[in-house]
Length: 278
Ligand SMILES: [Mg+2]
Image 1 (cartoon, helix red, strand yellow):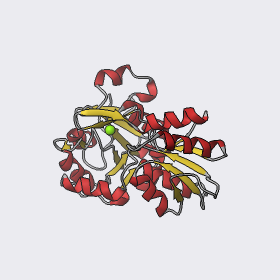
Image 2 (cartoon, helix red, strand yellow; image 1 turned 45 degrees about the horizontal axis):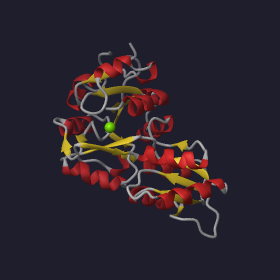
Image 3 (cartoon, helix red, strand yellow; image 1 turned 45 degrees about the vertical axis):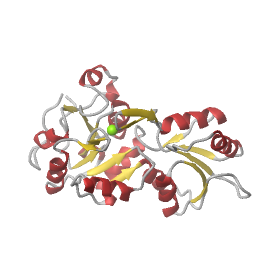
Image 4 (spheres, helix red, strand yellow; image 1 turned 90 degrees about the horizontal axis):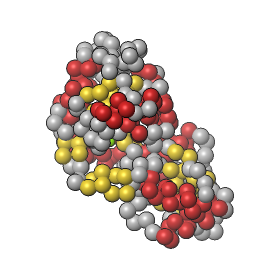
């Protein structure tokens, strides 16, 4: 059983498929978030979406009655900004393919954000979800990389679930750019170990004291395993219990719960151990 071990002291929640689906909150999400806050588990929020700022998500959660400090929210956009800071990459100029959130987060840490090549050299090409992606943007990114820029991907999610539909995700755009310049990108968001490690650091706990809760095996659970976190699959989103049981070892969650509403039962009262295993 992988569920035993260190006491869980922080809980990291994925958003879509865990807290809400599209614009509909998942029953019990607010009550669980309140319970986690009251009992000192954070909670922290981690989404692979790069299109919005952390403040946007704080407001969105507030709309569901969930009070979340923007400092407890981590997006693949804010993680990318942090990557520049933590690795001493500033000052830097980045050509960005993405929507408002990624540009804003990068500018806040001092990255010079451009949308096309100019006279000054481009150090990085950052690619995320962009619903206005064009052939011209692809060409700009390709030329910048061929001229020496490093390629960074906010995430590689092939698809993106929206209300009643599935649309191409940031990973589809990353694939186009990576193919055009024949380069493997540096991956920032889930399932990179970077994502889980960054949130555990933010929470001030050791990786094994953090529980990653998500609905997708190949992003949430894999990211948790790679970062040395404990993991919990909820069945209110993408992946099913059957898929979890059939998945490769590193995508098998420590815990499987019907929904986020069952999390307080799993964690029990603070000071208790992490609950039942698989
Ligand atoms: Mg999700």
